[in-house]
Length: 208
Length: 208
DNA sequence: GAAAAACAGTGACAATTGTTACATTACTAT
DNA sequence: ATAGTAATGTAACAATTGTCACTGTTTTTC
Image (cartoon, rainbow over all chains, first blue to last red):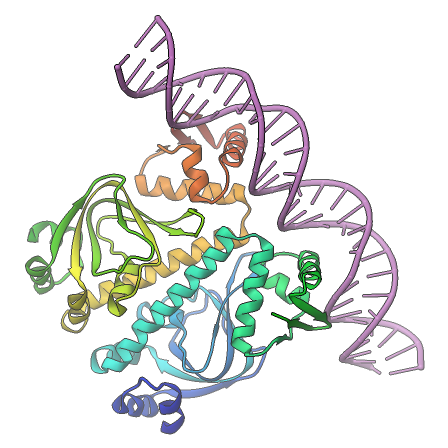
């Protein structure tokens, strides 16, 4: 197991990798699985070895607002933050591509901060990059209308999947931007007319 | 100087207070001063002794979206995050009530993490509480219409000032919610009709 | 292969928010 | 006291977004 950890979490020191290997459990989830629900207690810090996870903020009425992706080599900042205080999860995380996760038990997360410089830096860097990502999300909702938010949304998805073909239904996009399907259909049509996308069933092709 | 630090940052250990006292500079700012601008490099972690600061996210067109307050006993999470990586500020911070700040130089922020357990916990707790606050902000914009956002905004301000009389102009509120004054005037009038507020010049009185 | 379910397109209209334009009121400074 | 400025009120209209109703198409299921 040491090898893949070393490969994916390149900044980890040799001793840290050993410690991870010795103490952390590997867990697998399938596409569609919900790893953490809002309100659940978090008992582990989650590191992603393979696959993809989408992180959402939920509201009382069942709304699921998409915030960001978690990818191999990354960790869930919320799980770090909550873990240290044994708090409830403020977010919901759903698997969108089968994942293998390293589950680091709560006490170790804390202990390693003092023992391993590279863990400390990884954690701080995770905080920083997530905070920045969340601030960008705020930008997009606070300063932008739905058409620009949609473009921002599609771009982020394309970046993560590394391709121009997004396998998303209009309904799915609408839910994740907290609007209605009709609005998304309308805006996508306009984008198609402007030559930015080509629309197919369950498939949006980015042309630029 | 030791005394006020001890009093305000109650979780700090005696040794930490000594270290802060010996190494950190105290700096004062007046109401209206901008402490950090977007894009500026951050060289210190900022702790608030007295006064109040408002933290904003800016866009290219001069929009200033209000995110949260910083109050005595709190620290700027962004300044911690950026400091460790010597990054540019992603936010703008404005004094709304004369402040005294402790400026902790970048290298110490890091060093103390290893040396002082109480500093470590303070930093982690700052991350956590800011992250949670920012997630709540996302809720309010992602899931709520302007009328509810306005109520949320007014409530937060009342919580911080600890009073029912908010000294805010409609224009000010509009800027901080990134909408127009007319919209705010309109919504406030409706709230007045519902008996939630009483409107005066530069003064909104919360009735419930 | 027929029925059901999921996906997408679209027109009509409602509600909310943004914009323009101007009036009125209340403070401020000299 | 008066001129000037800042703050607020408000009507009318535009633009965006949300909702409803209905259509057609593709995929899935039995």
